[in-house]
Image 1 (cartoon, helix red, strand yellow):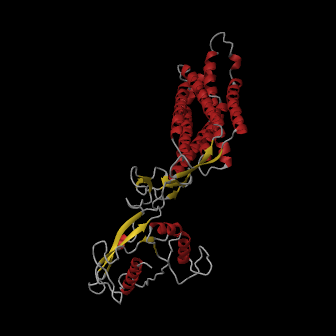
Image 2 (cartoon, rainbow, N blue to C red):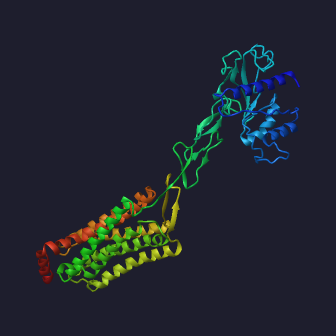
Image 3 (cartoon, rainbow, N blue to C red):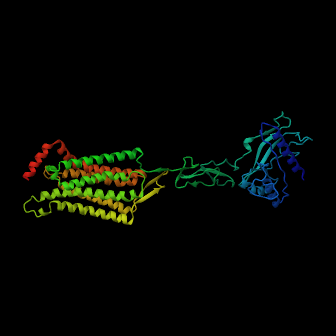
Length: 507
């Protein structure tokens, strides 16, 4: 054995002895050590490293068979090649490895000091404790971790810099904390790197991660990019204030529609009700009632039944309502055309005309919705991508083209009704409701023209909110503009009703 290696062993024994003797350094902990020879042989290096880990007659890797031994750290060999061989095994078990634990322990150390031991292993001169750290990336760093002062007071002979015992993994910088990832420094040593924040949507959960990872679809990255947080479930519920408010408005308008229908049935024999085609009026009111109830299909946890019926039901019901308004408008226009001498369209006036308009216009929408449900019907859909922190439960419309075809056909009917009402606006006031129909169609058309860009620009449950609001607003426009003047006369101005009765008789 070379003398200098023997000196290293004595220095190690002395350091362990002094640490164990000082109760303030490692209280309730006793250090021990085992010394092995590598014989400068790669095979023996691996063999002795395994001896340190699993000291039994036969090797059982990853099983703790010696309960009396708790390996805390390993000191490498005098040469870097031996330390590298040891690191191949020790790095797998995250065991720190120190290289040349006591540097400069010789008769002439690096500071020019003479170091010797007496018979009791007591130091005669002061010296520094330095170490050459071997890192997992196979880089090295020399670190001064303490000093020995033999002449100091008892308990102060050995000074350990505890903050230097666990050094960083790189020679050039500290650890990259969670939320950052390593990026190699150009032109620097291979072990030198910068710590770069993770890009948006990615995280690094551990120190010194090579790259950030993307969170699963049902989670999102925290603001510090150091963990993934589960997304919350998002849908328009009856239990939240917005859902309760919309449901309350829907029920309120439904009750108002029922009251209006009851008023018209009660006054069914009055001229103002008869003059406006009672059957088409009742049909329109019943359809508006269904329109106001339709949003209830949009609120709550989307199910297969709700998704299958809500959009087609909405499209058909509103098409019937607009067809009723269009039939009323055309009937008024035709009624005033037949009073001209020699008119040949008298035979078209009456229920035959209104029923034909209502059925034909509604039938087209029914065909479109039937094709929709038969080819690509709506279905429940879980959207994890649209919102960063929420999972949206909703309905996929199936065929987007047919969905907008349904909306486009409703818009076409409203435009035709608006044009017809506009040309009939100058008819005699006593019989003319074309002005009110014009207002109602203008509101209806404006609502659904505004709906399309607003619907496309929103996400999550607010897309449902936009559609519900459009349904309520357009239905309210028809109800208020067409029926409020008639209810005013029936309930508050019965004298005007008698006057119209007299005019009707003369007519």
